[in-house]
Amino acid sequence: MQYPLELTFKFWALAPQISIVNAQGNLVFYVKQKLFKLKEAITIFADAEQTNPLYYIKADRIIDFSARYEFAGINGTNIGAVKRRGLKSLWRARYDIFEGDSTYLTIQEKNPWVKVADALFAEIPILGMFTGYVFNPVYLVSRADGTVVMRLEKIPTFLSRKFIIKAVDQMSDREEQQILLSLIMMLLLEKNRG
Image (cartoon, rainbow, N blue to C red; front, side, top):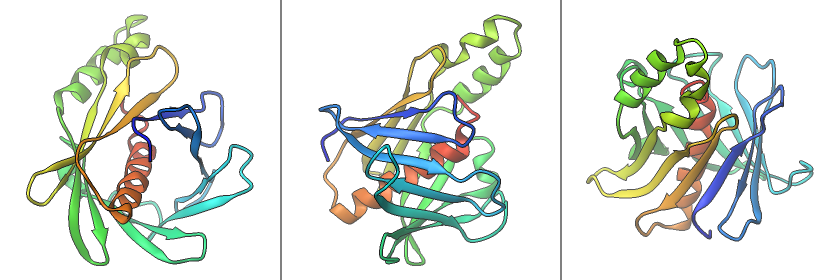
């Protein structure tokens, strides 16, 4: 993967859609969340025309605050999972990335005050429209020993939502897959914030 990756939410779509391009501007993934599903169902494609699926993300239960989201390849092989840390995520977004039943990576919001300032600023008439340009959350992916391996940050934009993913440390191909799929799922869950 050629970093940094840029993620852009499609602005006028009913169902959330994200295009992900690499440092050369080539499309790496196209993400589409299915609309009106009780259980989350997300397909990640290799192309914008949505003809070549690569991965599937499915929730283990119907709409729940701490559902576990399983990742599967096109042939159904399990790749891993991600799960929000329930009530601990109210103050600072935290997600655990799983390999089987064990957690070995964590996604955590760097500064929870950004979300507080964003919520307060959004309530101010007219000025609230600029929150996406002023307040930009940063999420860090780290191993159990605290080593940061990847960083996701929001790019200041007026109307659209854009994020950048940067690799910070070396990782295996499987770790990279799990982290990228987890970050995509986290963004879809946190899309109403920042």
